[in-house]
Amino acid sequence: MAGMEQEMLRFFLFDMVLPLLLVAVAAYLCGCFNGAVIVSKYILRDDIRTHGSGNAGLTNFFRTFGGPLTFVVILTDVLKAVVAVWVGVLTVQYWGGGTIWAQEEIAFEIVKYWSGLFCLLGHMFPCMFGFRGGKGILSGGTVAFLLDWRLALLAWGGFLLLTLLTRYVSLGSIYAAASFPVGTWLFVSHDRMIMLLALIITALILWKHRANFMRLIHGKESKLTFHKKKEGV
Image (cartoon, rainbow, N blue to C red; front, side):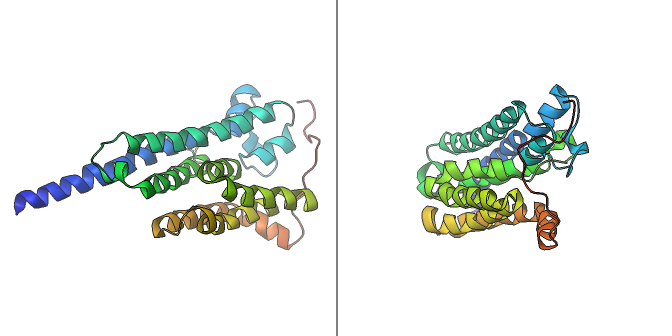
């Protein structure tokens, strides 16, 4: 009986918990490579977090610096999400042929959401940059594409439409975040764990946009413009 309990404990720790912990750490570290901070701090020598809204995200970078380096920021934040999810899937795929992660198809979907969540945590709270990061829309949108193109279309379509019509990037971002669990339910899975992870991701992004939400309510939110405000850069 004791041997069976030990085997069950080993299975739980080694086959269930350890893979998730490894994926969480890898995805978080991927997320820490914040494109806006890296480009502004180490290439432009002018930390984006000292300008504008202080947010280390694409919108604030574009408003502050503009120029072709904006595409480097985009590429960095897209690639890190791709790598985070890819590492997560490969980890559970090759962890062991006899484990639940290699046998259950739904497990791969769960791991994608799990990887996406920790990638966003790394983006928002990067340990290498004083835990001051961005708000997760670009990386989160990339994760949506990796999950299901219809989910991505629902999120990105509404984001682009609202942003173009109102010129409020934050309004489009809030919609995209809110649509994420809806799209998950419609196009990915009704699994409780997946829905829980989708809701946590949404809650994180909405929480990071809480100041934007209040500025929208009071009519003080800045609109998107297509020229850089910072002179001499």
